[in-house]
Length: 68
Image (cartoon, rainbow, N blue to C red; front, top):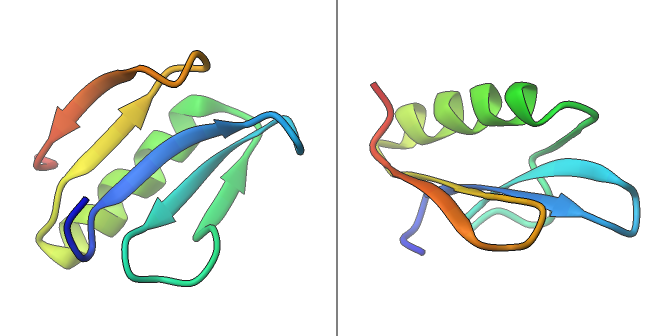
């Protein structure tokens, strides 16, 4: 992951979708719905000129690329 990339993962410990931005401390945000987390990740990646990486609940990457 490059600086500024935004990653969506499911956090089983809190049962929420988390958005993490490479280079930032901790999760940028946590969401009940994956779609909301994806929107936030796209916005963060666009702000940073970076990629968004979306994982399924199983941890596999299901989408990767520049937003837009």
